[in-house]
Length: 118
Image 1 (cartoon, helix red, strand yellow):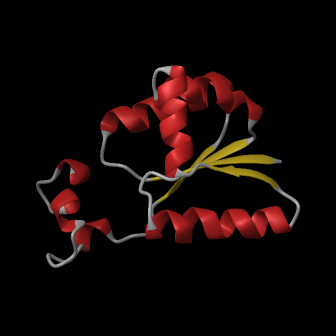
Image 2: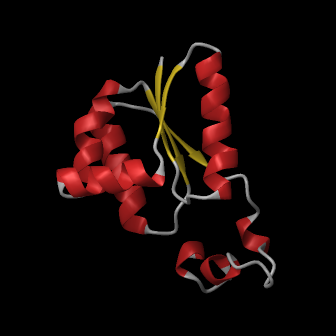
């Protein structure tokens, strides 16, 4: 099985939710590609956009694991690729997005009237 991991938020979140599991899966013998921010930037530069790159790469994988996003165009493009290549997509969303506390910097993206909650 070949897995493509696409973190939607880089930094500590992508380390915990993507890099750590990718390392464990690799150690267990699974073929995993986990994009870093640098990888994503190279893909955007060389292919004219991230989804142009993903459209060329997706069929090499059996499953895509991605982080969540409040941007509808990102979700729309991911599911177009899912449908085109018949590749299952797992969206990592274990947070309680309806109850992000106001002191959390993420609140600006997920408060009740934010784009992320719409």
